[in-house]
Length: 332
Image 1 (cartoon, rainbow, N blue to C red):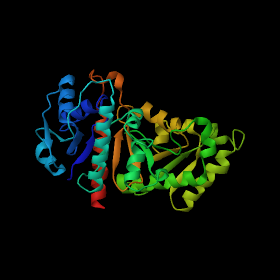
Image 2 (cartoon, rainbow, N blue to C red):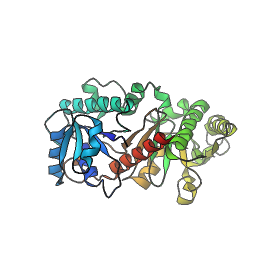
Image 3 (spheres, helix red, strand yellow):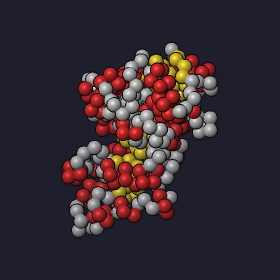
Image 4 (cartoon, rainbow, N blue to C red):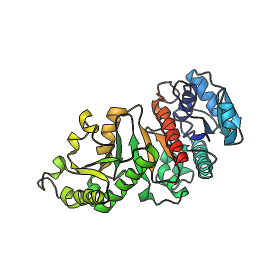
């Protein structure tokens, strides 16, 4: 299988050491072949600092990764920079941006099977010319997909969630929610569960916005006026959707057995339960793209970079999930 492309992320963060840790665990973790888009020297220094005996080998083409992978971590080398964990620089941000640009192009060309993005600092990227809100929007632009159709799903062993609104203030959420937005993002999620996750008839649980899903209008009108019509439209289209459901009873173990993805109205309604349940194995997946893109569901963690405290579970999960989704697409 064509290898996955893993970007190094901000080299001052935990991305480089977790890339090395993932390769070191690749045999026992049953990972597909991957290569890192980044810096050979940074990876070597990060591995040594973490106490890992990882051989890093430069390749010039993704097609060389398979022959290298069993004995060394393959890297498409973009050059050396100073490696100082916990101290981000513009030079490091420029490397992270170049890695993202190059890896995205390779996946779009079919030379890499999927894109797995390491964590970056958006404020640092902005200093070196990055104009998108985040990596998701960058990849959407590169693929010619409108931002509102690039849907974020957080997935772990216990739960999958899709926030309908994402990085906006809580007071702005009611004004942004529309039945069309809920329906569109839910349709994209349902289609992705079929295509990338092999779920023939996905079950969607749609959360209400207000406490008790509005309690028949006593606690807000949005659930009846906005969420319920979206659910009705999904049902009319043949999608197994239920809601609006009280969010406070959606995430216990028995409830989670009744659906394949929870459609949530705002950021924390989605992210609090998945981080509580799957903190070390959460994966950020971008749905609605012509390519597979995943990312570990954590940030750069500058405060613990280089200390050996960062756990590789989310990176392993992001690589594994990207490989599984890419394999399903290849068979379709």
